[in-house]
Amino acid sequence: MMVAGCDVGSLTAKAVIMDDEKILSTHVVAATASPVVSAKAVMDAALSQAGLDLNDLEYIVGTGYGRKQIAFVHDVVSEIVCHGKAVNWLVPSARTVIDVGGQDAKAIRLDSAGDIVRYAYNDRCATGTGRFLEIMADALELRLEDMGEVSLRSRRPAGISNQCTVFAESEVVSLVNDGKAVPDIVSGLHRAMAFRVAALAKSIEVAEDVVMSGGVAKNVGLFSVLGDVLGVKMKKCGTDPQINGALGAALIARAAVRSQAR
Ligand SMILES: Nc1ncnc2c1ncn2[C@@H]1O[C@H](COP(=O)(O)OP(=O)(O)O)[C@@H](O)[C@H]1O
Ligand SMILES: [Mg+2]
Image (tube, rainbow, N blue to C red; front, side, top):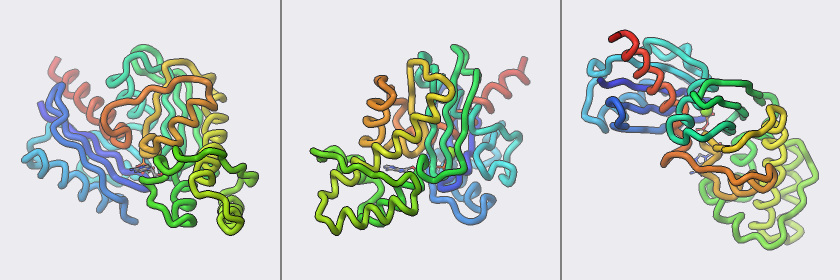
């Protein structure tokens, strides 16, 4: 039984194709201005990687910010539910999921079945989202994917006093001009962001195990500092936390087919 999940986020589109218990292919592309186009591009890539055609898929679930515009899905489900399902499948002991994506962040409490107990959401302020890191990577002329490693070389993290992304960017430029070491600046930025994300997570009362989901979980520096700020040892999940929304959607598609067969 082959199914798929497609997650069209604000920054990237993700697709996962599954055959029962097995993940056949996963793919991530940068989102375009059109969710319709991004969804097709990422699904085509995942299908060709698996050597399949759209008609081979029995059921497809869409999620993410652009989910309502995906042409080929049979159903749509919220990202919160999808991240919850994926993390429960990957780490059954998880009771808190922190999903930080390109333009939003979510903290989700799960029960042992992976169902949502409560959640909190931030899509109002860039500082607790991946957008903050993108802007700072540009300001520092660093690659986004290198920020985590760079920050691990820090000896004395810089204090970042501005809470607002725009003002924090000016602060970063001043710190560079003052000769502050780049690893210390990046580490200070991760700390500032981690406090924001931790405040969101604390609003739903963090319970262990805590798992980070979404693209920002790939940033080893932020991942480690967030665990420190929360006072927990966070768990890693799967091989690519960025595809969790699409994985959860595929798992929901699989459950839909199984319940139809009954
Ligand atoms: N290789 C990487 N290393 C570090 N951070 C990354 C990497 N790839 C993506 N990111 C982070 O992930 C964010 C996008 O996350 P994603 O979950 O794909 O967003 P969305 O679901 O909102 O489209 C980016 O803003 C960036 O901060
Ligand atoms: Mg997302």
